[in-house]
Structures are given as structure tokens and as C-alpha cells.
Image (cartoon, rainbow, N blue to C red; front, side, top):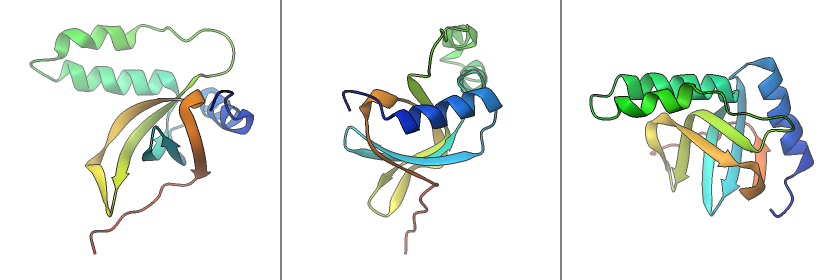
Amino acid sequence: MSKPDELLVDVATLVESGHSNQMSLTVVTGGAVITGRLAPEAVWRQRVSEVLTDSSHLGEFSAMFTATTRGEGPPAYLHFHMARILQGTVGIPETGGMYRVSIADVSAWTMGDFSYSDH
């Protein structure tokens, strides 16, 4: 989208203000379907930092995720926690991942977390 969907920006703003990671959302961006729960940016950054800290090879990147960089104004990104990229009948990764998606790049979205099945 050249202009972000105002309703989606409102959803992201509410997630940011509530500090909750319970809002399920599915988006289409760059041809990929991503489904999962939204988290406030600070919560998302903290979780990514924890994962990197626990890595013997990536620990040095941890600190950059603990720095607060969010400016004033509406959110420009969606921060997914426990998210999957849907590919056919499977979700990748199976356990869920951490994704950051530009709201301006979302071409379609719906409330809810799509289930997938390998049946």
C-alpha cells in the first residue's frame, strides 16, 4: 500500500498502548501470508533480545534490540510474536517466530490467527 490502512494503524496503536500480545492478526505482505499475535514493539524487542542473548553466536546483537527507538506518531510497523508464514498447508516455523512488518507494505489483512493443518 502506498498509504497505510488507517484502520490497521488504529489496531497497531491500540496494541502499542495496551502492552498486550493477545491480538491475533493475519496479513498479506510481499506475497507472503503471515499469521500470529501482535505485540507492542517494546515487548517484541525484549523477546528478540532474550533469544539473541541465549545464542552463543548472536549474543552481540542483543543490545541493539533493547534500545528504545520508537518516535512520536502512529506506529509504522506490526510486531508479530508467535507468528508463522503460511505456505500451503504448513506454517513456518512450526513453533512460531518473531516478525516485523511495515504497515505500509500490507496489502490485505484480517483479524484472527489462521490455523493450518497437515491433514
